Length: 282
Ligand SMILES: NC(=O)c1ccc[n+]([C@@H]2O[C@H](COP(=O)([O-])OP(=O)(O)OC[C@H]3O[C@@H](n4cnc5c(N)ncnc54)[C@H](OP(=O)(O)O)[C@@H]3O)[C@@H](O)[C@H]2O)c1
Image (cartoon, rainbow, N blue to C red; front, side, top):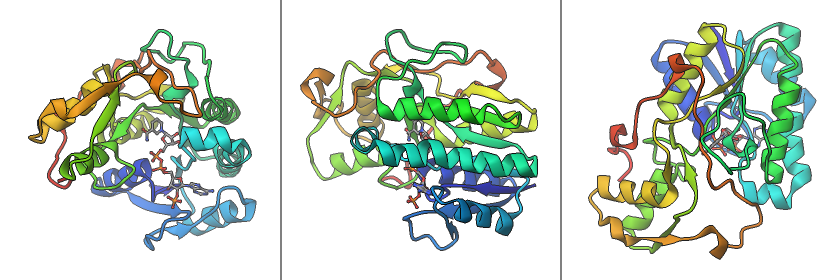
């Protein structure tokens, strides 16, 4: 099968390329501002660019991790967020519909308001900020196509040394002695990137369509998570200080009592932070 990954230069896109490549699948990927020349430069806000990517790759399956996922930036640039987070995926979906091939779209736990997590696939969405509203809108548009699988992950991490990986960022701060504060009142279900991709690929092969929550097995606060990262890599967890979200005046409101669970146990993820290979991170 030939896969086309829009946003292969990102954290999730990179995991898709690695996991599928390790299984012997043929994978083509795209980048936007990135410089990795393994990937074709594509702007999903441009129709011609998307059409050209399809003609070049002739995919049997399309993956869409491409997004602007910085919630505060989206709050302050709603038009750009709409162009990339809603219109871009809808444009790709139209090409997938024409080719009659399935697509996997990556959405987010931020479609929920975080008043009573964890949330399952059938819970009503109620986003608190522009980013979540745009992702919820994209879900609605893409689900009009029968070939769409919408994956919702939360707080994605991996063993890759890239700034977009929060485990890597925490370890850099610890290594360089920078003070770390982490939210004690934000709860979520951290999601390991590799297992998430493997479960999404299994769901595609099972012809699962619709919405699927793929998140890790534990729900914990950001503070607890960051202290665990410190402990697992040999640092004193008390170097991480608690802070409440009210003390940070960020542009976008976050879901606090959040996280995801699934109604489909076949796709449950069991790997925890303890199972992560830290060897490339320090
Ligand atoms: N990270 C998380 O914790 C998390 C949690 C829940 C859900 N998600 C969802 O998972 C998906 C992937 O997130 P991520 O962490 O992998 O994000 P990321 O690392 O920021 O990757 C985003 C990708 O989108 C590409 N892109 C941005 N603008 C583009 C444009 N105009 N045209 C084409 N490509 C463009 C980027 O390309 P360049 O880098 O080359 O510019 C990059 O490859 C997103 O849909 C996000 O909503 C992420």
